[in-house]
Image (cartoon, rainbow, N blue to C red):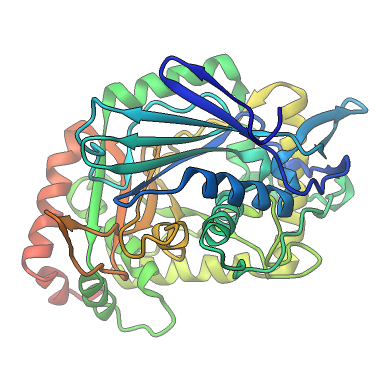
Length: 443
């Protein structure tokens, strides 16, 4: 279909937007094994209190696709085990819905539980009663990680405002890892890939999570994060290190006091762009992240020890001598799992917490389409002891907008239902007392 083509289904109008001008020219980009998250998606939602011009939006998307022809491509399997994205300048569907039933966007927390979208598309919904505009995007993970998605959306937002992108042109070619570069000594760090299961077994994990766990959303102001950081007299650790350490120590002190349960190490999802041009240049569009396992904490109830252990693991993840064989080993296991039709389980391993943080990235600001300090960002999914961190959204008070706390964050994860009240009570007491109980302890 051409850019102006559209169809109507059940009160929803779907338009198809093509790259303008087309730039893919049928080029092939071969995917590394670590890109083969074939069924995974990133589902994000942005809410705006101001009107968005649909024609201008489509024009901006058309020009963005021209700069990002990978997104307008399709997946190919050649020679049985080599995957490519062929840049064929496909049209991208946009579904537009005028919603008369909702009064306003119904969610408050940044990380929400919501039915996942079924296909790659962008959905624009106009909530008539409050004149809110909602953009939902479902991004195929095989295109790249969350940072790739953010850079694409930031380009779209800026072109909509007739601004040039503020990031370098995207690089699609990625390093292809060789089997001979892998190292068996890294296999003990690869439980996520080693424990992959057939797809049909994944549904039982999801059901168990819904039945036995509750979602926790903890909000911290920028001032509270500064207070936390001051508790650890170590210049080497960051505010983020101390935030994660605080939540771990809080859990270990009030919820996981049994030594068999307590969190003893972290598994941090690390972005390795910029470590080496030969591995991943800064503007690479790919899945340039991996899970970095820390050492066990010497004292799992010490803010200082936990924060320093986390920081050492991050430093280790930046060492090329470590990174290259690690990625090659993960690449080999990912290819094996795809061949055997197995998928990774986002399961909880004992004594471990996963950290998937976007504290560095301000999604609401980067994709505001000119609605400065008024765009709100939401995303879906988290798991048991799978910690997701995002910046705080702007707050609307009636018709006015409060000054946004740009340094504050929200942390979300699932915890056993039986432990939720204990955690929330301890956390709220700390906020009320300005973390007084931790000041009196040797951390």
